[in-house]
Image 1: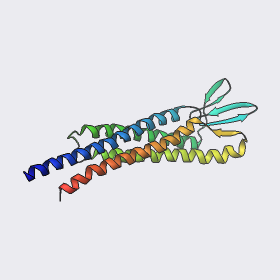
Image 2: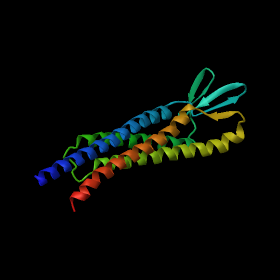
Image 3: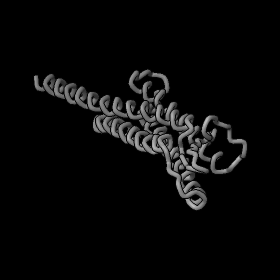
Image 4: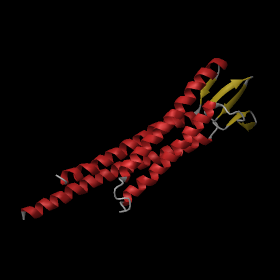
Length: 193
């Protein structure tokens, strides 16, 4: 009788741990999904910076710059644009792969049994956060030093701000998945003793 109660209690504890673990994973997937959408929008749109020149407002993104009435592709290969583009694309890929592996962690398939999908998704979200942080740092540093001295009336715009919000969301995605991983590992470690 006592052994049966102990088994019921262990099942109840494991059920609670799995529920919290799935809650963390769900929160992580939500943050990663929104972060990935923001990364796509931020990378693709032309509102990283706005400035005024000759009484006209102009804006530019990573791929094009726009003057009143038309937008043109950046034809110059400027190192900081190339670096920012590359880091943003790498961040997008890492975040997307993290989402795919994060969804696979919910399924709990037996393939890749030695591969903890929860941990891998968390690491990929941190890698995505690192890449977008690098992109934003490079763009910010060069823009402030160059445009801050050249133009008096300029500002960062909404595409740029979305990039910074994506940094926060991908970071929290990684935190949520690492918390889920720790919850998954703690009962496993206690059962092995």
